[in-house]
Length: 181
Image 1: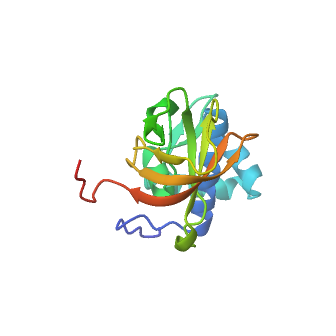
Image 2 (image 1 turned 135 degrees about the vertical axis):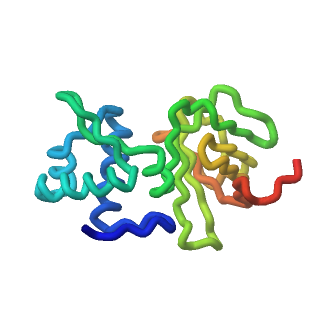
């Protein structure tokens, strides 16, 4: 048995990859994902995947669902560990344009594209519904349901095909920092 340290969860690369894959597959299907399906998508032996999933279950990152429709699904902790925000009810993330709340714009996903280049920090905001934004608009997104992340920025580009806004980030805040409302 390997020993697990719980000061933050240290995952092996394989575990991380499996967890990421599980989150992706689960997001697409919203059904428990079978071990065999996981094995196929990461190109590993199903036995190996089963063992790894067992250890992820021990870490409470994965839930095993029994029965014929069963499989694995990521727990809330899995999302936090991978720092992927799970948006169950996408309408919950407020979106503001030039200071006014945009009704009817639903934030589906927020991707921080260039965390590695803090001098050119950008966020991709994937919207469901219309994008009435144009370059140069001031945009504020958030707080998000899970991490209460709030992003303020300026629209740097609009991808109308994928309903995605590219923001040049001016400021990101999350709770735990002092809020003066």
